[in-house]
Image (cartoon, rainbow, N blue to C red; front, side, top):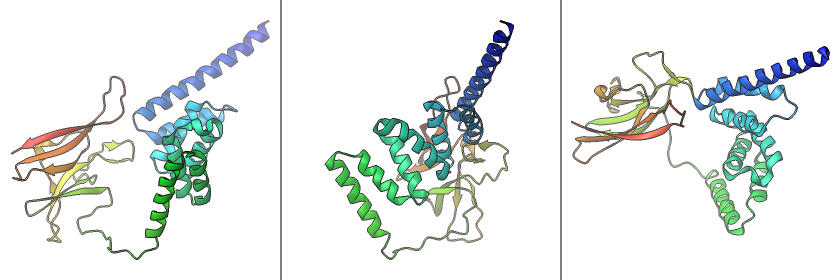
Length: 251
């Protein structure tokens, strides 16, 4: 009897540890700390012969979100092998993208034909594929290169303003220690530069509107006196996904 109680105690203790790992992994995932989430989800998965669908889904999404398509491919494939066409279109598309990024082009095309049985839908997708294949063989009309003001971080969404342009960047000239947990880069901010002046050092745009969140992607009114830009925020109370807000600044 004592031996049986001892074995049951070990079993319940193991289940408790596994559950706490998964709970902690969920918190990391919901806070966009995907690398940390992967470590815990992987540990939970290795301890079970058949990981739960929740753990498989979260591992697939976590790897996909950090652009590790090789591992994302493996976990989305596991999900597809279990659920088949019930896997959902979103997961199917991510699996196809991961397969193509891993150079498994034929398998990606097979999955599209398996999943989309509606002739109209399948025809549209195959036409899109044929178009993409055709333009990949044509000679590029434009040459893309970095501008002198580009940084090693993300620089995007330029908008003409006054005698220069405003763009979003994760360069963080303030050298802040706060990083966005998703990609380990500083939070986005808006910068102004003069692309015609090579030695012009980009400067913060609307410094009085700085926040602890992402500020990016602006639009400017015709008279140049109203600026619209996006700012993301997280509702800490219920760990809602990232949401976008539109702010208006007049000056």
